Length: 318
DNA sequence: TGCCAGGCGGGGT
DNA sequence: ACCCCGCATGGC
Image 1 (cartoon, rainbow, N blue to C red):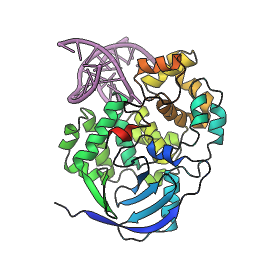
Image 2: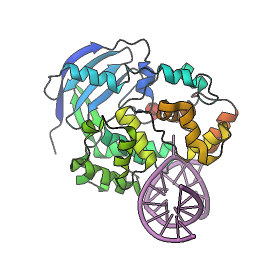
Image 3: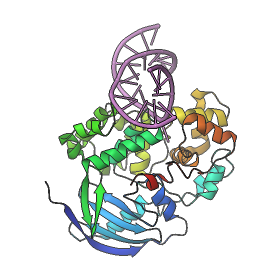
Image 4: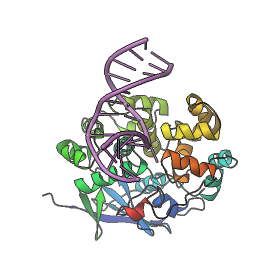
């Protein structure tokens, strides 16, 4: 049994923003152990743990192993919450859209929360060939089963497993119900243990080049690569288009399935990836047939309260 | 019970 | 370039 790492506070501060809605940003696609409706934990580094406690009012405290941090930590916090991200063009493009128009105007304060490339890939793999709810349950199970914890001040906080954690205990992936995806997650973990991918070095590469690199990992295809590029790099050029979104696009814009990506990228340009992610939130990530009903009934913003959705997953999975 | 769900790779044409 | 199938698992 390893001694639990203790993180010490190093900086207090307040995020000042007019544009960003921290409640939405913390709530969307989150778990109850990282967000409780009032405050959340942001993991700036999931290997050498750096964790930030943030409240929806913007007050934050950064915690690190040494108790030392630099301005760079604040920059990284703001980056991971998209505080300085200018989505004016995205909102402008979306305002009249029959699918996302209402969402982009009512939820303009939402920003994706970033994660490490390692964890972004795990998130993507868990979405493969599974419903939203099944994929997020897999992730939840993974985090709970590996049970990696740090002490943040006086609070124990769960962290995602590291790549070595996964390589050293592959069986837990199966216990987490990931099925054949366990092999892919294991492959990804080995790549990171072998330092064959360096997130820092990849930042300056183009999304297409990053996509090709990621697709070199067995089990990582275009969808997973692109989703992870959105989450890890905040590069939104390439849309992760799956069966679900492809069908939705073909219905809404009345185009053949094979033209779905083309028309989506023509419409959203360098915001194509963000728009894809936004669509899942707007439609509560309902399975396809229900999503199409929602579109027909023009229910194009989150409405579900009693079942887990991207917006309220945190209320159900604690 | 059997079928399907935010994919993917391998094998066909 | 396509098309098609099997793949683990859990929910309905």
